[in-house]
Image (cartoon, rainbow, N blue to C red; front, side, top):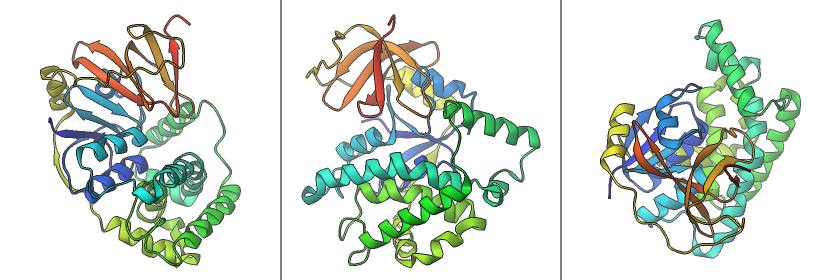
Length: 310
């Protein structure tokens, strides 16, 4: 199997989720540092449009969304598992709750003026203005939650997590699972990237101790490579064979030209030829002058599939 290549940047919370998973599974991987905001020409050369961070590349296969990336890492390294047998369904449900519902209010809290100053204070005013505009575009113009409302929401989430940790070291038992990684990364951002507002964690010491345990897992063994190196690797490889099982939920035949986009936040479309549609993922084939022919994979949950001419 080709090397795992993670396209990410250090302050990305969702990238930290995957970095922690790589540490938990003690995997070696290649690190490609990408821009925090658009334009991201080398990312788009691989994905065709999807721009959310991180993406994972293995040869000429490109995986979008951390839920799918975690599934693929589980296939590569089954142990230690992200999906304990006794809690498979609950693990995914709690993980989806954390990624979909807790992330936005926590980040709204983190980006109150004191936190935002720690992230952007050392940057030129033009950069900060461009960053704000970039994130507004990703939200599709939807307003960010006010810091006062975000604070109340964040505190409620912290209390719920603390309740889950009263009698066990991790959210669902003695070992971390996907739920832990999904819940940890925005709180990691509070502590590590916006410490000016991290006093919010003081009322839930069980959460703080749990976060210590999560961060102690490390990040595996990364080796930095350039973005151009990653594109060359994609060009030199052929996409892996696909699952032949076809689940048609859209009335769209394999081989059709389609567009896939996220259902919220970062909805830039990706167009290509539909080459696989299984119970859990969608795959398109596309060709780029710099990346060559690649397969771009998306989870079904959280993404919308349409015919290109629809």
